[in-house]
Amino acid sequence: MGIVATRAVRVLGALAAGAIALAGCAPSAEAPTEPSAGASQASPAPASPMPTLGPSEAAPPAEPGSDPATWIVDLDGVGPIRVGGSIAEASDALVAAAYATQPPGSCESTAVNFASARAAPIVLYSDEGTDRMGVVTVGGGVLSVEQRAGSPRTIDGIGIGSTLADVQSAFPGGSMEEINGRFVVSGNASSGSTQYLTFLFFEGAVEQFTVQERPTRYWDFC
Image (cartoon, rainbow, N blue to C red; front, side, top):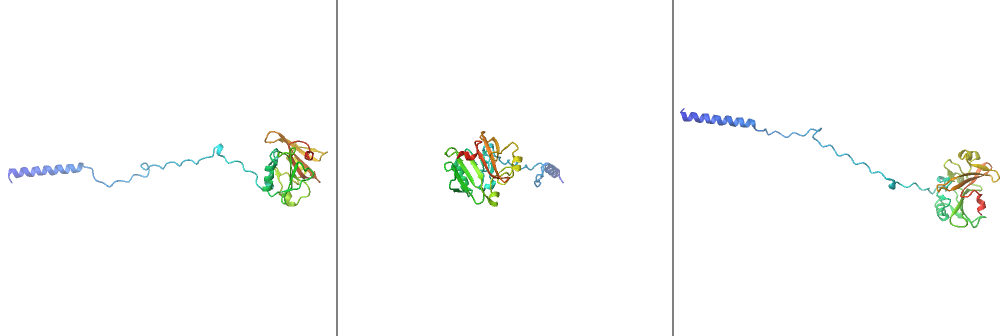
């Protein structure tokens, strides 16, 4: 082999070695790796809290229903019938509860009478002949078992048929008026004024009760 050929072989060898070295330094084309499930994946955004009702959005208290047995008796009145309120509005509530108006009794100018087959009779007395109600009475006379059971009661269950002992236990601050045969409870209504809840007895049990603005007997309004 001549000198020229020998040099050519050396040059080619050097070029091949350089190419091999460069190939070793180049980054390898590997398949992309999937990110790990721990640190590389983004966490889901937290769920937004449920909206709550503010004071102005709160649901109003439930109104008394059309079943007199669910009506509560207190110093404000009897269920939807509010002493000091409108007789016309109270009449509408009684008609919605399946009461029917009856002919007036002895208090023709002030009383509006209502009767029901499933609850005790109710009488509304106007304040001096106006639409403003001063007295509401519940009961009176002979009642059926259904009428007694379907009548309004106090939060303690006091109503038609309750004994004097029951009434005294529920209202220890009340007093019995022997001359009138009635048990009287007085206190502040929600309006702030003093009103009266009275119970009349017959043969040891409540026959009738009233809610009224004045301490006088309800029949004195006639």
